[in-house]
Image (cartoon, rainbow, N blue to C red; front, top):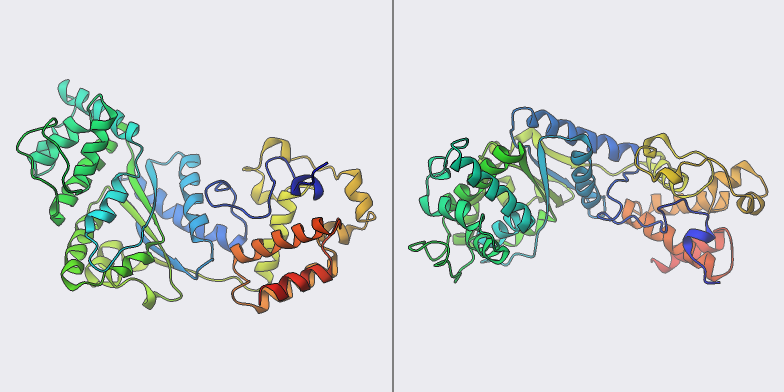
Length: 400
């Protein structure tokens, strides 16, 4: 019979790994510090949602600190709480020195599913036709953009909707004659990007009663834009977007300090629009917090008693059982200390935590879980049902 991590270490329903992937396991957030940071951001998002304002923030911290996981967990939490917010995950691509702003802007608006865009545009056009909504050319200042937002995005053909989104994003050489004649060849001005975003946000608010919230991951890549002329256009465009009231945007950035943030986001005009107090640093945890993080992961994923209270609302219903398998009891000899440390031996868990605490790179959640996974796999390879000191030391030495 082939071994699996789930069977070998008596993992609960819904768990087959000790490595938690940000998108697949987005409902889980381990660590009291991590949840406090999430709850702070969720509180700000909720408060702004009351008046259909969009939350603007910059969240930064060391690489591997868990920003991507936090980003996806926010997306999940907003949906669970039923806030008047439409979370949209955006992963930045690498930007070259002369990269036009349209590359970034396309990533924002094309992160919306095409069918959802079509649905909203069709519903808005229906309300306008019934006299229940304001025509977009009276909401924004560009007739051309209003035409594409209402006609192109409401087209019955999804390819036409996708083509219209590409034009609205500033892509060049898009054939738009079937949508409307006399349109500009492409959008490139900062005010145009602002008008597109205002129009989209207005339709989402009118139809779904929600404001879009763009969760921009790996935004440290904005630092790649260094050409002086291009930088100026990026700055002007970011000003346009961040001053739109009913659009939210949170930048998640790998940076050790605030001074290491992309220069674009440190410009006074951008900081003022985002809010100086909305620059939030994710601090690394201390020794006790790291141990509590690991203990919580193990207690949640392994059938060795109650699921921690912090995770009971998100685990699969079948994972809430509190019984300990007889085979696991036999492996740990009914010793409470060994059961609490499982899949480690107690001394091996202490040593594991000493090693990751002493190594600034290993003390990050992603690296800790990676080492835990490797140690568990090594134990399986050696036909051991627990991780002992020899395995912990071997994994640590291989990481040097």
